[in-house]
Image (cartoon, rainbow, N blue to C red; front, side, top):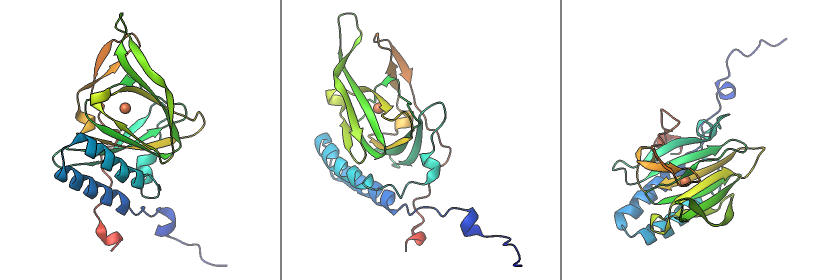
Length: 212
Ligand SMILES: [Fe+2]
């Protein structure tokens, strides 16, 4: 009879994923913001960068992909040192949804796993209630959408699936967890909102020895 294995670290500790795609993304995004402050260019080229990032999901560490049983999670993955942009993973449990909310900075949303339903809101009616802006749209896996405050940035988002987790990667033009913004009731009533983040620690994307 063979002696039992006493310790097998590679089996009890899942190996961390290669975060090189996220590292490359934040480098490229910082370069983009060094090159231009033209919002049209930022959204156009930023969308291309985010589409590449969400084209496969192996780089996202599992701790930043965990749903919460009661509410959606927003994990900070990276914040630019000058807070010009931040990158988060947004994790939706089955059927979870945001309240109606705004952003007050530009944003990009790319779906990494699953799908989302997005409903925009535009002008207010004569009673002050928010009016839906077009139909509810599906944002599918690998698709990217821009949030442009010049065109209106109020929306409600939900997991398109009632039976599984969805994950999207968002980029915002600021330290989004600290931005003073608002949620809205359907009657238009506005409430101050600062989202914060679900995680106390960031993923280590800078250990280049792992991929050297
Ligand atoms: Fe949003």
